[in-house]
Image (cartoon, rainbow, N blue to C red; front, side):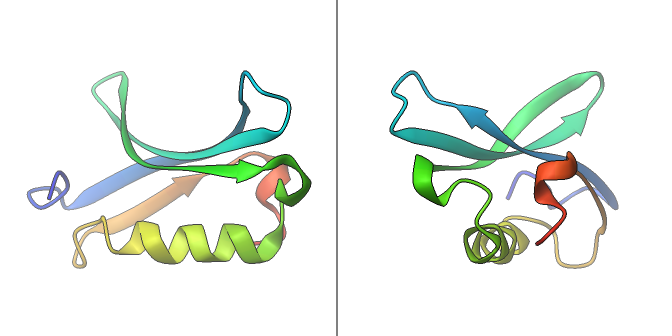
Length: 83
């Protein structure tokens, strides 16, 4: 597990456009030493972009990718306010 040795995980979560207009990417990246390391990415149909249930399921899946005893800070934009 990438985060197993970390006591603090700062994670950026964001929706991004996909080259096809039919899909968007929901991605979580670990912020570390001025870089971002992808932890989890989902490709989601555009009509489900910013869907609160999709976002909740994504965060639940993300929890499984992070050290369970680490302190976690998640940084999002305003599009994630309903999750």
